[in-house]
Amino acid sequence: MIVKLERIEVQSRKDMEMIDITPEVDRVVAQSRLENGMVMALTTHTSAAVLVTEGIECLERDVLAHLERLAPKEPPDGAYGYWHNRYLDYDGRLGFNAGDHLKSILGGVNCVFPVENGKMVRGSRQRIYFVEFDGPLARTVLIQVLGNGGAPDKLSDDD
Image (cartoon, rainbow, N blue to C red; front, side):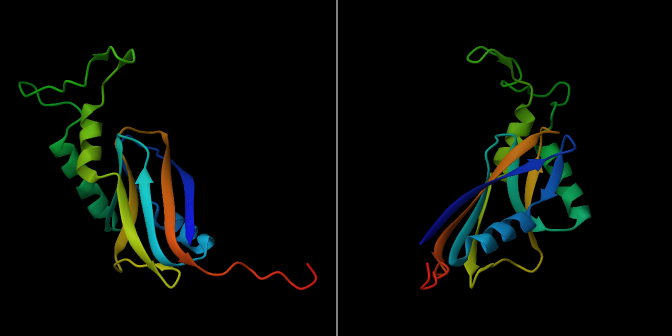
């Protein structure tokens, strides 16, 4: 049984940005020697998301624009406000990013894929994205593999 957790750092460069982390997830699966099981990617942040969609730039723009319409950084004048956007007396900080937290809830914080014969099984166009809503920041994504793996390298008789 293989259970391995790896942390990767993702550096966003924009306020809102989709970063393809599929190659990193593939790398973790390959290095783990997992043969059959599952792999999960999870953001440790509440104003970011991990989501799966087709990997094309125009769709990335559509995803970000749609989420901004659903949970704008600043609600329109005359509309509702965000209760979070205020002084937070429990930790002494100013809450200013309620819309970003709401986008994270809408997008989700994780994804899971099966692993078969050492490879992540996904649709031909599916890509795994880390989605930044409150950047630019250095962020952490957890990638965990779980399942059955190859036997460790056999030691020679001389060892």
